[in-house]
Image (tube, rainbow, N blue to C red):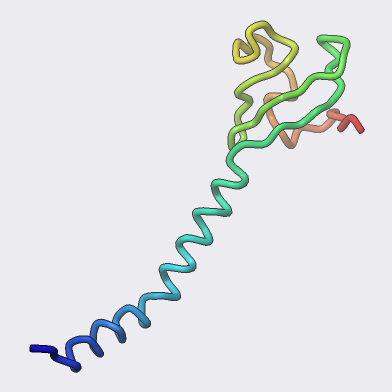
Length: 89
């Protein structure tokens, strides 16, 4: 038999937790969006403009190296907020 009060309770609980669920999904999307980013700048060590892929605050790939994920230097580009880095246009 159909119990309207049980359906009403389930809908109320769903309505109650919906803001928390929407906030959680929003935070996950924002975190995913900022997880990987690519920057282009002049590298004094390589003597040319390079593309660097950051995952969070860690360098994962740089076009100055072959293969690009074999980063072997300790330059400022390893830290995205380091002074002395100029953004290329």
